[in-house]
Image 1: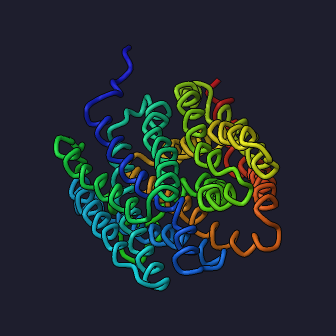
Image 2: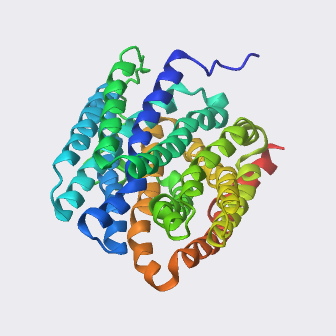
Length: 396
């Protein structure tokens, strides 16, 4: 029996749309702390808040999109969210105070949350169930490329131009996204009573998929650790006089994922999620420790490679697992739940870690995050890993 086709027109389009969403996010979050410090003389904790508050706004956007997308329509939600995303991006040109910046970051985050939930939900319908792990892995490459190109370009433009040039690039990317979405055919899902039985207002099940919560908790802790890289790499690499290596960290990170993803996606489907996730946790922990101890550019780049093999594959595998363990008719909520928890970890991370930096320094920060990832490795076993092992044993 032939496997269902994965590389369709619609799969390529939604992957490209997702790239634009995360490209804009990653470009700005990598430089916003430096911008807040240089422009408004913000402290490390407030500079971290300028990065993290965006993600907290994204939670509200995800909650709204996750519970409303089926009623509004998936493609319509995609257009609405991209329009909101573009509008809030353009408002950065008028930022005149730190307070205005923080408020704008919150609304910009809400737009991002809506847009990323729309693309994630559409992709979950387009990817065949029989190729869920492989398809999600390839789809996540759009995020991977955005995670590499966005921060690299943002740090490069900040060094050689100014903040407004970054905004122009983001605005162009979001404008192109509207054109790219025109030929996208979104699968129609007929609403049923069962589908909306838990969608009532103020009902938690209308916003959260319980079966996706265990792996979502693991994702939150993992993203908390990764936020130390995304938010403070520019400042850290400047402090240790390795700015160029710090910029290329994200390129090496992406290359590692591009090399490993074709294998890890198939391993997820054939050998189970634990076969991918356990080694990935160990590699990510080592990457953070190597980064914290780096004194040469080669060490920073090595940490980028290890982080790609580690964090990059944890995130995509966890996303596929969240959908895999959830009921078919609650894919949208499973996707929303996964990203809400990821956003919590990524959002509170920069703010909390900003308070620690004056005490333990950036080097101590990254070593500490390596220890947190090691601890998360064991927590994964108790919350999800042993369940996955029992399922594999039963199948055999």
